[in-house]
Length: 323
Ligand code: SF4
Image 1: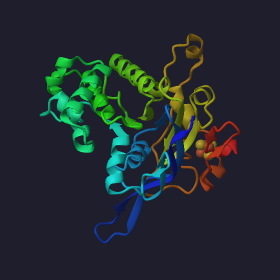
Image 2: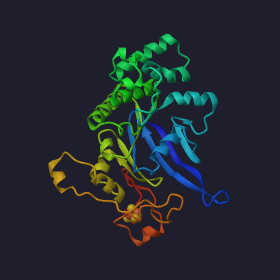
Image 3: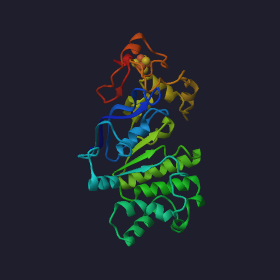
Image 4: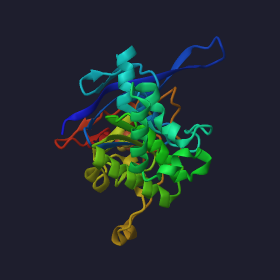
């Protein structure tokens, strides 16, 4: 399968002022020189704690925040250079499912109008065509036709996320960015929404970039997983490799918190706690960004930042212990 999305050396930085209005300018590198690809019809999950840069990276891919440098190709098109009409066409090809179904839907619009909105703003279709598409989408996401007339407050949390998913599908996008799509939902409803996303992927050949803080959520959802820490990718591998043989100490700690249904594994599973706090993002240490919290840190780790290196199978890790 060929790559649909190629992200190369993407960097997003924000200006911060220190020391009042006369203070010198500093930059917070929310996303710092990351590269990855997503194959057509597959799911890449980007996982990390709050502040890791995962959501900013997704927003930059969707052109919802400005990238400082790097390139993002959707097929052959460099989307960071896209302008005007091409940008409108791009907006049809890349859609977002937001984290919070409570706040991402306009409370004054009926469900039918919410789902139709991307078609109104991005397509030239007639009202009859749009009505037909919206009817099909309600069915595809498991909502009844008569629910089109209801307002968001008349739906449960899971149903609201189904409306958000239908809206994201309206323009038949090539790439859907799912930003923590189940983190605001109950566990039972989470499973229903994840199953729905998987079914829609199979039915429509969708490609997902799936953002989550929880490796447990992405374990049945992803073909490959990139783990981010302080703006960098620290490990990236196919799902099987990452879950059975995680290499980076940070990934190992995140995985130790994921409950397993396997009784034998559960008996031997030990939670690895990550002590301390991440470093100041505006004043990063010169060595490994994880060094002040890493149980395996050595002298070199505090002096030199490890490079993200790939083995022969494409499993990439940034850690001096593996160099
Ligand atoms: Fe830990 Fe050193 Fe590896 Fe960083 S480079 S993750 S500090 S062992």
